[in-house]
Structures are given as structure tokens and as C-alpha cells.
Image (cartoon, rainbow, N blue to C red; front, side, top):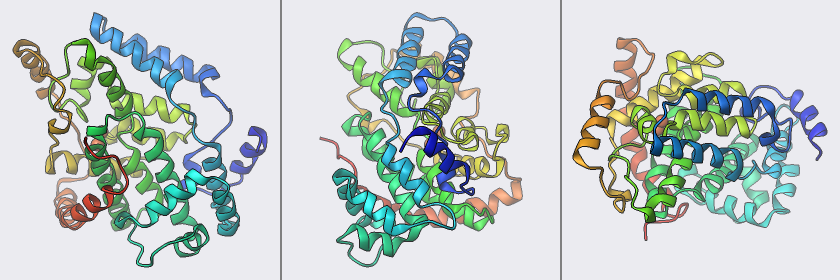
Length: 354
Ligand SMILES: [Fe+2]
Ligand SMILES: [Fe+2]
């Protein structure tokens, strides 16, 4: 499908998960708006040799090294959207892609998607799931594939555990608070930290060079990330989503999920994902055990960065205190229920630590 045709197709779609993606060019690297925004970010970063070098490398990775969003997936989201969504046509298209078919069937058998029947064919999956769920599954599969290639093997499990918990809790919170686009909440939750992938790619590159590693718990900690990398995962996620031509409301979530009150395009969605992020960071602070190959900073560097980090909130939510008490309690119950499901589901989906 040509870009012109596909853009026209998307233009008539109703709001929904498919509208997360709005494609108007094959290669966003050629897009002057994107290049201008990269320069804008670059100009905001304080000069510092190592930090500046990492920042430059991050921009290179986001601008040139990341793969484009697969066209088959874009086409599938169009086929599976709106009142004329066609699961049979989608199944036919999926079957032409052997890798996607295999990944989808693997995903279908994961407890993460809670299908009671054993799924043995794409046609059966399409019938069982229906258009909305099949579209989410296609996007999830392609994202796990796209992002997974950049994560060190030892980090995949932790990253996806956090991401799938965020997806499922965002979907749950969306339903609980009357947000009509629960599938969109799921995808936004799944991808909220996608900007960490280029940071992990840099750490893998630097591992052999004996350069100063970041402090423990740098990930999902924007102020520490900015000190070390020159860019945090929110800025990077925003750039990646821009390069994949995601809708502005979705980019807004990736950029502002640690400060959801700053979101402009879909504050409701940003508030849901921001609330879930805040919950997860306070509920289960991750540690660096799965990245243990990285040596710690020296004492002075750690103290300086931690001092700066502790003066800022790691994340926030924009619910009132009384609402948040109820939401937190509800999320706790759902979290306990989901934890073993996610842990079980991940064993078949992502590469395990060596
Ligand atoms: Fe985050
Ligand atoms: Fe997160």
C-alpha cells in the first residue's frame, strides 16, 4: 500500500487504537519537523563531555538506527479499525507474514491474554479475539519485537514485566474510571517506557569501554537519566513515537507520563498511565540486579547525582488525594492478581537472562 493510499485510509478512521498511528511518510528521518525537534532537544542539554557524547549517540540511534514501524502492522491496524473492521481480511494478511503469524500464535497461548481455548491457527485467533483485541495483540507483538532487539538479554524480563503490568493496570484503571478507549490505555501503558531502549543500547555499547556506568536505579528516573545520558526516556520516547508517526495524544503520554498534569492532547489518558507509573514506582521499586554486569559509579559521582535526583519527584499523578487513595487500593488488589499472571506469561515471550 502506498503512503498516499494509506494516509487516506487512516483519515477516515474513527478514534481508537489504530488512530495511535498516523502515517504520512515512509521515513521520518527525512522529515524536517522531526529534525527540528531533535535540534531543539539537543540545544536544551547542558554541555558535559561524557553526557554530551551519550546525548549525541542517543540522537543518532533514535534518528537512524531504530527500525521503521512495520508496514504490515500499520495496514492491519487500518483493516481492524472502525465499523468496517474485517477480521477475516486481517487473518489473511497475517498469514502472509510467517514471523508475525508465529509470534501472534505464541502470544495467544500466553496467560497475558487470558484465552481459555488453545489457539492453533490465525483464523481461530481472529475469530476468538475480535477486531479490537486482535489489533492490540498485533501492536503488542510488533512492539515486543521492535524494542526487544535493543534490550540486553538480562534486562528484557524486568522491562517487559514492568511494561505489561503498566499495560494491564492502565487498561483496568481506564475501565474503572470510565475511559472509553481501554485498548488505547493498554497500548499506552505497554509503551510508556519505550524511550529506555536506546539508553540500554548505549550501555551495551559502553560496557566494554570501562566508561563510568550510571548509578543504580537510573531507569525510569528522568532526572538521573538527564544527568547521565543528557536525555531522559520521556524525551526519547517522544522522539521515537514521533519517528513512528504516532498520534499527538499518544506522544503526549510518552513525554509526560512522569508529569501527567503537563499533557495537553489527551490529559485523561496521560493521567491514567501517569497514575499507574506512579503506583508501580512506589509499589515495586526496581533494582539493578538484572543489570549487575554494570559497575557502580564512584562515591562522589553517585552522591552528586543522587542528591540532585532526590530533590525532584521521580513521578507524579494528577488525581485528588481522596480519589488517589481509592485508586491506589484498587490498583494494589489488581497488581497482586496480575503479578503471577505476568510472570508466567513472560517466560514464553521474552528472552531470559543467560
Ligand atoms: Fe517512565
Ligand atoms: Fe515506567
